[in-house]
Image 1: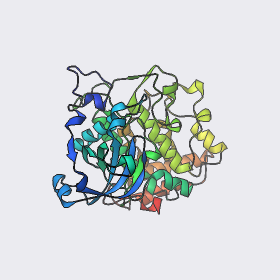
Image 2: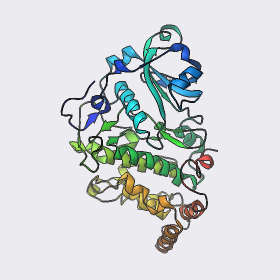
Image 3: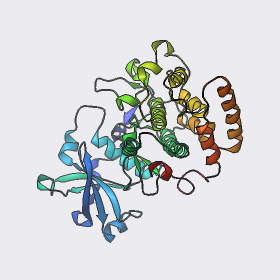
Image 4: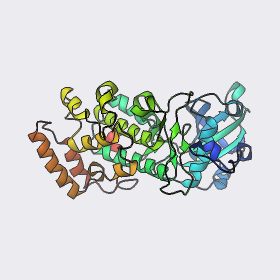
Length: 379
């Protein structure tokens, strides 16, 4: 799995790895105990695991209880046609473990060894990916239960955490390509964790800084990401920029959090808007659907730019982090208040829920793991 002498981008994280999976540490089956099964994965199962003191000593920072994905070596080695690869996910885990990027599920170790389970799973040669245990599960499940996010104050925090992680990924030359509510977990402190890097790509060399991102050619293996989160260009262009797909998916995710349903692709992206620098049909759709009370003018401006049909004009994740709706400062709040009054005069809507959220947000402390969490959203 060593890289070619002159690695060409874009490439999978497996292709960019400087080691072979056979060189991974060996996980002693007696060094951990299976507490329960958390779920099924494409290539195996995810367990809630308890570490022995010896295992914690081997991997400093490993908590006593963690999530452990066990993947059959045979299934991983055989692989399957498609954009998603277990080998790529394992290599991504190893890469992310070294990078230690914010707002992603911490990777404690990637290893090989004999698996645990019932029947044929017991003693089966396997690969392992150890990550943080997120007690509160998928954000998607919470959204299904609530219908929509009631706490407006929580949404800037949720998006700040997500976009902070995505920005760090992009700066490291990595695109996720499968951002969705299903791939966001919530830990015990109410913080979001982005997971599942099976479709991730290296789009530029590590340490290349602002080097131009390599375009990804369309393949016969399928389209990246999940249907509702795909940007318009993946259906039309012969190639695409993966980081711009990530930003579009984040925009879809924010819309879904606010409204409680996916944005209607047929109404928001007409063919004549293919070169537009923002999603111009969004405001009229919200008015006609009587949804304008769920998305105030500040969030609307952000969404229009994140879901711009023209990927060249679509904002970056770093630019989204600097948007007034995200920053929530007093000065920005006053600017948005002026915008709100102008929008009301134009008949957009009477509510200012998003602006009240920005105002409240200025008093709730810093973003991140100390001052803010998603407790209000998931309660």
